[in-house]
Amino acid sequence: MTHVIDLRSDTVSKPSEEMRKVMAGAEVGDDVFGDDPTVNRLEAMAAERLGKEAAVYVPSGTMANLLGLLVNTRPGDEVLLGDQSHIFNYEGAGSARIANVQAHALRNREDGTLDPAEVRAAIRDPNIHTPKDALLCIETTHNRCGGAALPVEAIDELAGIAHDSGLRVHLDGARIFNAEVALGVPAARLAREADTVSFCLSKGLGAPVGSLLCGERDVVAAARRFRKMLGGGMRQAGVLAAAGIYALEQNVARLSEDHTNAKRLADGLRRYPAFAPNDPQTNIVIVDIVEGTLEGWLAAFQQAGVLAVGFGPQRMRMVTHINITSAGIDEALDRIERLVGVTAA
Ligand code: TLP
Image 1 (spheres, helix red, strand yellow):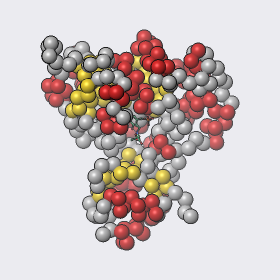
Image 2 (image 1 turned 45 degrees about the horizontal axis):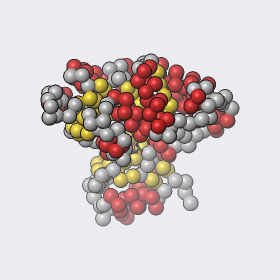
Image 3 (image 1 turned 30 degrees about the vertical axis):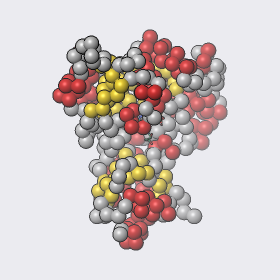
């Protein structure tokens, strides 16, 4: 069997030998007691990279975002977010079920931003009848908007509108380092106006698990309590955190290779009338299926050893990552070329 080229997500990447060595050698303690030195080092490093006072290490991006909701709101508050955002679409309604907030989804524009006028209009005047708008969530890079890296000016403007009305701002920066590399703007600058920012080590950065929530010291302390409540307090987590430290030190600059590979993939696919890919700014290729069915193409790709996922009706997503080389992209395109003749109907 030919080797599988797995483009379902950047979450599928596997830790390198070097990363595994660092994990095996990690010094550990009990992180719930706060004495795992490797976790403490990762948290300090994350806070510094994101320009915040403190950070807390959690198992997943979903938990980091949920903590962001929990620390920035009270039950019954309203949260403004994008209708294409990960929090709104893919986090099991944890906002409603666990944070007990009402989500008010605003239209995401194609570039992943929200329309400032629509945000202004959505913020309700305080009134005995209305929910209290407590939080605005922004996402960069924007997953469903094809990995768009939001311009820093757009983030600043949206955050400014929220702050002027007394709302706090949470940035879902699951892939913020892809944005840093694509824009040439440090993550700390991108997140400057956000009160809390989450980011993931287990996506483009190639660590097996782990995310962080960064913010002010007292807010992170509150998040730590919620983390324990949710069962996210891990013990000798330094074994995992070591992978995160390695990822932050070694795997950020190379994200540009993933971005180049995503462009190469999109350019290759664009040659076929069946596919209308986006022009990827980072590592996410969104392909509208113009001829044939999504299910048909996904099955044919899988048969050929190229894995993608459905991302809406007649839309598929392919994501480049640390285990995908430019030769791997060429191989995937060769396999797809062989399919196009036989599967197009
Ligand atoms: N996204 C996953 C899927 O859930 C869609 C992926 O394969 O892209 N924020 C953003 C912007 C994300 O894309 C994701 C994961 C998360 C948060 C949640 O991270 P995890 O999976 O660690 O809970």
